[in-house]
Image (spheres, rainbow over the protein chains, first blue to last red):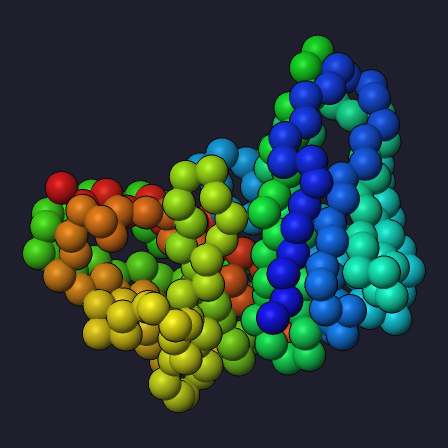
Length: 111
Length: 114
């Protein structure tokens, strides 16, 4: 059974710092991995999608890497801003199957 | 990215009544939609997978008679909470994807049963 864990559970940093959020999964046979952002009381916003054949994806200040063999993905946020404050979720999909979500990392960036 | 619209964004209903939540993919056809429930400060819990034109597949422990799912077209899935009780109060979110690639989520519906 696939299990997805995210570390740390919560993070509070000053504005401007570069951040690394971690996601681990127990079954390396994944189809793709997706990172999401969730603001309080809102739905999920897709940030980055990494297919199983890819090593990383970049969008603006965000960079996500994938190491399937070790069951890990990292989300790198450069030059963090207060507007980045949210909960970040990673999710893995095995073939044409449902998404399995991680436990989430609550990020607070203070001015 | 693609847009998934969920309606209503919040609803308050009396105990014993039914509530319908709609999920629409606005700019793509979604053969599969997913319904999630989220408790405060917790991750998403998958309730059911909704396939267009066929019966939904429910996760273990989810009452199919209480949470009715209909996927009548490639752009619309509905979740009806029947005979709602206060313990059904929660945040419900739908998701849709095209060909199991990138998943897009609705804005969520905050259900409060009084």
